[in-house]
Length: 232
Ligand SMILES: NC(=O)c1ccc[n+]([C@@H]2O[C@H](COP(=O)([O-])OP(=O)(O)OC[C@H]3O[C@@H](n4cnc5c(N)ncnc54)[C@H](OP(=O)(O)O)[C@@H]3O)[C@@H](O)[C@H]2O)c1
View 1 (tube, rainbow, N blue to C red):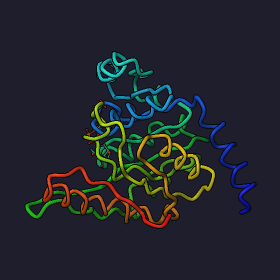
View 2: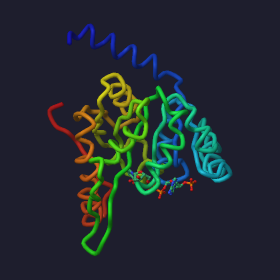
View 3: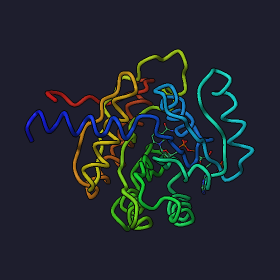
């Protein structure tokens, strides 16, 4: 691709993203709430979703009190946003997506779900019949553009208003190049982050599983570790 066409593509994505509302299914949890804070700080109206709207309203109230454009709604209303993030535990993931499949059709869906188990040795990746949570999402949402990203971002750092930059690269995988580029551009909007294309959706399993290693790093070193890809 020439740099001129690359710049034109980037402009088009920036225009698509400008003012886009971001809905977050499971926005009352640590990850969804933290991502909501950062997307709102980047200028997006954010709809935090919950199975119980009152819970989302309470969670959103804390962010709105800081002047961020965040509202709390039922998941069904969060699913009506322009771009939708799925931030629920793996166990509830597939059935939640099937419930909202019609509202999510035609949209870019960002899946950050890590199917993990925990035992006395620490975290480990679960075997997922579809290959990965992201592929399971794609099967549940055949009319959406599922992109997997934000698996390795620390919810603790995202939630901390005193953390101005969240230093990590966000590995982005997906089968629709435009959707992948949009999600990478969204990551770029968060200070400290870079969105980096890391392959097709069939490679989501490694990203999800790598989270188990990062949890081990965090436990050993009392850290909130991120990732950096060099020479890019
Ligand atoms: N925490 C992290 O640092 C981190 C980092 C990267 C990725 N992730 C991934 O992000 C996802 C969310 O993580 P989290 O730590 O925020 O999880 P969480 O707090 O346990 O759950 C998030 C929200 O999901 C909803 N939920 C719970 N069980 C559900 C079910 N069975 N069906 C539908 N919704 C359900 C709950 O909201 P309501 O009860 O209000 O509906 C809950 O507040 C996980 O898949 C995780 O692997 C987490």
